[in-house]
Image (tube, rainbow, N blue to C red; front, side):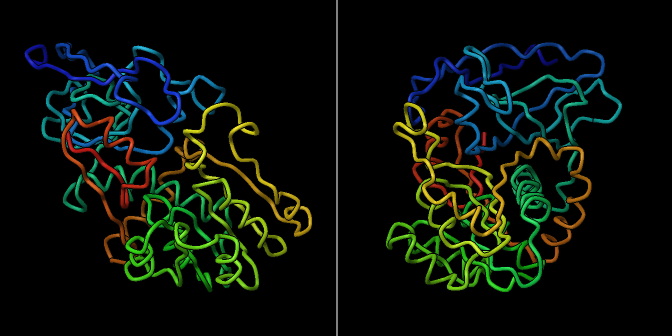
Length: 340
């Protein structure tokens, strides 16, 4: 059955220098292979576009092996079962998995998670109830140790992770949550729809002055998705025993050369010493075995309306590279998803 269906794939053709270009990928077509015992054929309906994908294309040392030249570009996906030879899956089931930038995949059923689209729409399972949601949950509660009365600052606050971080902090009793975003529309969204106490438009004002204005008594927890000058401004305004959570540094992902040469190195790191604070990086892959701890709370908050989320859904598989670039130019608004 599957051999009658064509699979289209974006394969990494070369390692990007700076912002990914269309020429960095090959668009290929091949027949879908037969489904073996224990395997499942999935039609991919949605592809998650995440900032980490830029790092996966690079050859430098990282927390995961880079995508090989000629390999299908790594990506989280959500789709529908077409054919199954695995007892846990049936035709028509909706699933998520790390299936890559392609239109179909035949994989072991052990690589898939079945999801219930009667609760939320399928794209939410690669957003607020997927990797971004789990990142926000464990990054805020486990790494950031947010607690009642904290002053919390979040960069990229209108994005897939940052938008959830601020709301989770509020759920835990943070006294003041401030988001950093680019442009008046995103800042209004952060305050009016997400419930942050204030928003800083980094495109319109000097970031250090703005952080000092909105956090006059300092910051207890800073959740950083951006790096660069924004990280420096947060470091300059820490409270004693503050926690700085390093989730990402999207401002640096497309910088060419070595960090320290053309990249941005923090100037205010001694604030960690003066304030007996800590700065810790984390990746969500370390928490996969603990997803079951987060899922009930996140699902309940979403179902009850306590946790607002926004999927920015672009359409057209052929637009994969164009849409991916939106992550790094600030064009996306919320969780960026490509509808295949």
